[in-house]
Image (cartoon, rainbow, N blue to C red; front, side, top):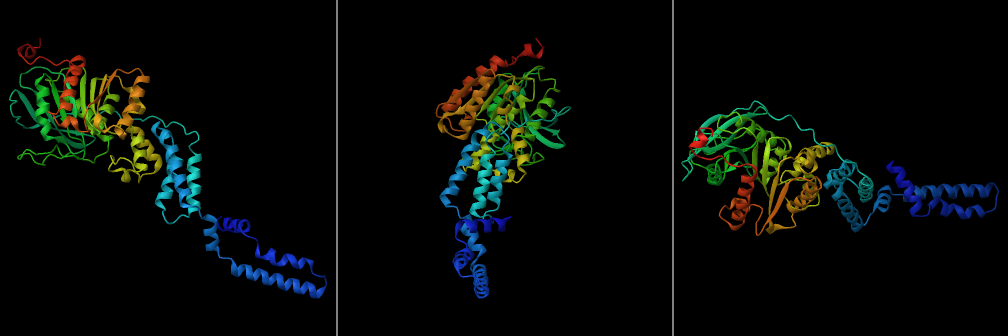
Length: 437
């Protein structure tokens, strides 16, 4: 195929040496001698043409595409990919072409690259929506093994225990806070940010939340140590969850498993539970809410990967580097990548959310992919008549919630507590609750 292309292009790009030499001889007198001379000259012309033809040079002439034209095709593809990807459409052909170009750098001619870009662009004329995720069944029959106690400074009225539990055959760990006064308390699932375990410096804040009249269950997630930040010296790194970080896939099972075990405790009130999450954990929390009908409300701080398709596209165009394992993710076949993105997407499963949502985002870094995906999420929540509040926190960065005494955090905490008391009222921490009244 390549040789035919080169020969065809050669005949279009320059006069044939045979025709230019043999043409005038057609006017020569006829006769044996003339015919011999004509045949000899024609043969010579063919030899000259064959000697002069350089297939490598011909290929360069044929396939040469100006660098600016190739870059224009690349940028056009990126532009045309943005909305289909954000909407969760099947862009397998376009991405396959993209990675063929990227993975064969130096092996493809400019013309071949241009053809692949054009094929990718053409495939985006009317891409169809991808099917929604088929999530696994929620974990069942999970139990806690209570391990050591963690003392929380100035909070002797709160019990803080490390627990171990199994999910998907993996040993996991978490921290559970509850008032020392016996009784039953509504459950709050706390899901931390990043992917490095429960921040040790958040223990005081979680204990304060429990003191209000809640059980707070804070799991580490698969592939993480229990705590991050300044470690308690006698705990160190001895509790490490099995498995690997899955970027909002298996972690949802970890969260649901923590909840399933919580409801087996006599100090957890039956009924619905609340979710508070930050960044990575807020993304896990929103997906947890989509998979459970027992969620009373969700408080989300700067959720990460609400629309993984948009984050993926952002990395494709060398935008915000908020998905550190993106290159490894792209090692999968494109069809598997798209399926995985849908499994991790909350925006494409908005209709499955039944709990009221309180969405916070820091206002100090507007224009980021976090803000873009939140705006899209809000538009879908509105279109689906969901109950939610969306708060852009003045002067808040992405991690403002971790600076507990800062103005942005205190502003958000006031709103958070009003939201919790409205949708998941705390139990009273006194003898009345202990007696079940």
